[in-house]
Length: 210
Image (cartoon, rainbow, N blue to C red; front, side, top):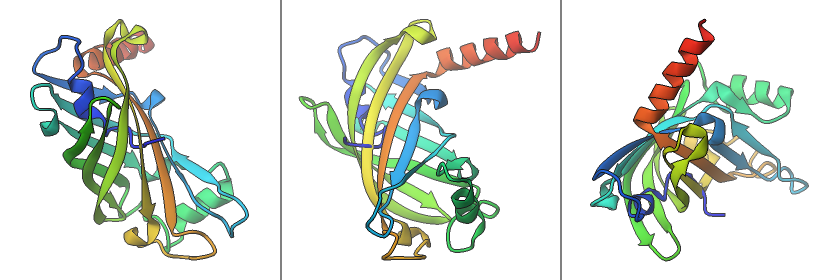
């Protein structure tokens, strides 16, 4: 699976559905996931994910390569599915530093290698973890662009993306090579028209407050 949900943006913007020249989408955090996996002493390949992912896609329909993506992930939303491992990764100095660097961020800098037939392209951007920034490339593909039935038929897009990272590039080199330096990252994303998303969230908040 080609991952990092946001990569396929340009293709999504070039679909035959009629939209304005520029569109803004908000990531739906309930249907957006960022997962990473590693090798543990060669015996297993555990995976973890972040339970909170927010972000915005700015889509340029006339010039898809000018589209952009910005994502923020709170480090404390890490979930390895093992409580003691969560505690270790979030509180030991050789891994994450959530007090000093509470968020992981990704900001795109370009879209390349667009393949309209395969609905795929590469999203280039800057990933910042522990205050360390590195350029990465997300291999991405468009799942679907259209009206979302759960959002009152608002315009929506969905993507898959993937990349491979070295945790040592972000100051996390403990236990290498017993625990692999390489992390396989997989992302799935749903994004909703920003105005429609905001309107529905406001309506839900108002209803909940009654």
